Image (cartoon, helix red, strand yellow):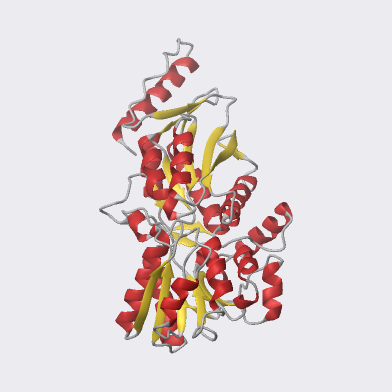
Length: 417
């Protein structure tokens, strides 16, 4: 905790003592936290906001994380420090424009204590600096681009409970080279910070293992005709194509791939951005046999199964919508724990939270017992216990289950920590 906030806290305590002794309590002391304080009146809620993609082709990614955070709130009885928790937010669109717009709207609301988000790394690149400038602490449950916690690029006050794609890309490469025994692979990305970085990390690691990258192609996130790119990829005779993109582009790549000469039998592998029923629906029958790299759900804590049951019951779904609901549950609870650590509560229930003190408390998170593992934030804001696995849609029965909402949950391979 910063020295300035300690002084602020002592002054609050002194005023309470004077009041108890019958003396007139002085006016509330001026906040001396370096980036300001949030004061929450006795009958006001503690306001946590989100920036999630909640519409369009990638909406399941945002709804999934929104649901995880909401269940974390439910599990506290909707309360924090005897105040109601207010949880609302903005649709961040899974693109730079949406991230900017969402962050700008949130930054204008000084009642917000912290933000859970964003989903897509393309939202975070322009959006997080705006939230930082407003003094907010930001914890993402699903940003995975290495850029965001690069020590030369990271914005102070930004943290994530999702894995860093330096881990996921390396794990996927090992699976393809060592487990599948493949030596010729291509990659496709959409030019965004998540997709391009993950494709490149995969390619670098695959080459380092001794494999050959036959092509790295880029498509636009809104492209619908993928055959030109797929035709160029086919010229290199890859045994597998790794395309860690989002639902819209991924659906077109997958559905059109078998129509390109030379790719009729080529294996497909995606990542967490398309590990969703919506992608399977968009792809169609070609998804049978496909692989995905994603979090290792089988390694999650004992409470994970209970979370899933609450999720399905509360939102009336057959299965979870996307991979990061547990990461969002953990993100919310890390924020709640940090608020409880630094908040100063007056005798009448007024709560004072120093914004820099809150950031410092989140940064100090160590051995936090999350559903996704034991979480410790490093100096760059990576807080995840990065457990990666590979899943496969083995047959028509698993395809049918995915279309109705249940993706494969039993890994075919697990990365060693």
